Image (cartoon, rainbow, N blue to C red; front, side, top):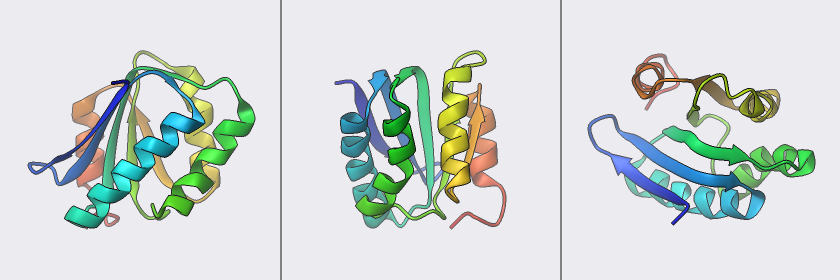
Length: 125
């Protein structure tokens, strides 16, 4: 499977791991499963492990992702950490698009740094 979605009780975060190309179809599937976790656990934090992923090349698809998440039910107030390998400049555009559309998103190179950010601040539930 190119992705997994699980709930981590220790951090009270939804943990998403993606391998391969993160295209719009895969994004929709992931977002639907994330929304199920949000409903089930009342969680408002998502840690996206994208170290084994590649962003889709379509700019239109990237621009569509934040709105698709909202349509699926994931609010702008859900705090999202993107963990990428190296500099992963190709994900910088995705991060910027989400932020520009009013989402709380930050990119990291370390799972531990991402967890610290997710667990800090007033956006947490």
